[in-house]
Length: 544
Image (cartoon, rainbow, N blue to C red; front, side, top):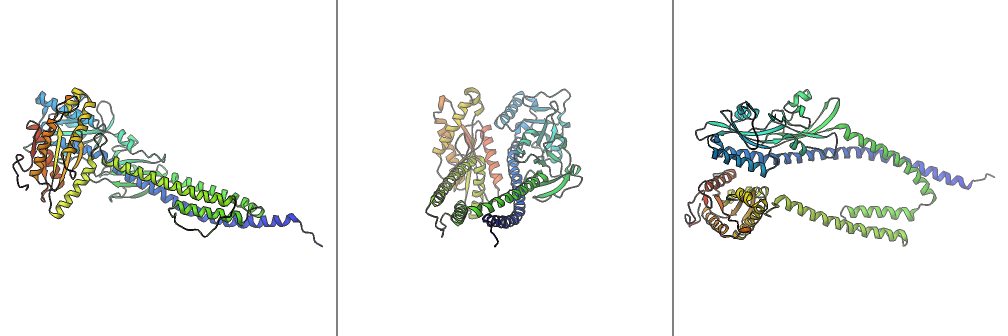
């Protein structure tokens, strides 16, 4: 009679369960690893694409104000007509340049060079023998005239610091080029924007439309053409896309996006091995771990686990996953056992639902706060320039489609620099906040008020003709003049007004209002200069 060992059956059960479980889990792991490799590769690539797109918006926002500053200065009569002949004019232009560098810390230098070789620049002494006409920024502006240059990378004459210069020719009323005005930004500061925080091999750089490198973390590449570095001319004519190439023996993946208006291209690069190596390592670790778990699971199932423990835990996992995915109303046909496992499962479900609700609530609050910060000026609480620019575009489209009208009032605080110099910047900030409060109280709830920049404000008045906007602006001027500002500071404003007309685009309307504001300044300040009426009573009917 054959004897059966009590332990042999347990060994067979353990061995069979372990082998079968291991085979199933290994096969499943290989499939999962393959899918994971594809999924994670796509995820990283999507991240880089989104990062590249974000850098495109950051760069466009960074240089939009630089372009606006250059464009505005190129239309300033004091800057156009060589101010070197008049000390008073020279001082006024230098004050303007200094104000721009103080208001925007991204601006390193603001200067203008003239065809006689002289240069006007704030807080900087030109070296002996310096000739502005020979500098790269001057020559590039002549080539691009009358447009703004795409940007010229160059080394500063004395410090050898790498700068990128955006410049434009100065053209007088006779159509003659009198010189060039330029605004410089530090390439190091721009490069900091392009830093990739997540991957050490990743970096970004800027190309001009002709393929020359404008900004690069490695200064040796600045000014070179991308085809010289890669050994071939990449096809980057489309608005965006991706490329793969080899550089110095390393395989690279890059994504690029073209920046409208600037004409530049933002390129984000990463080593391919930084994407693939961690995923492969993770895949092999997962397979190894799964093999160990399979052996342990076979022993655990054969000895003590059963349906009373495994099934409730699996059901709990499924329920928690449904709750985490937002399906909180899904019903379960499973009933947990009336023991510790059932009690734990019920408590975990309740805790998961509560935590999910709390996190969703926090996320909503954070999103609302971020949205508010992105559209609001922090100092005055008014809308910022980005917000009103969107509202202006919408209102212009609406007026164009439905044949309605709107007006804009652009005003700024007279002698604001003198207020800052006399009473201090804190007092100047108080004046800005008071002006913002006064604007809210003087205009309608339907009017959109924003801080356009510095001490300059813009008001969008929907369904408002030029005459009504003029009267509103004059009334507001009087309110400001009569207002009791903190510290007894006397404040007045100058304003320009312009209305919608179907034959003119939005840029023309904004530019006209800005020109009228400039006229108000030149006419003595504390007044309103409209585009289509001479005084508050000039248009009683409200027509344009």
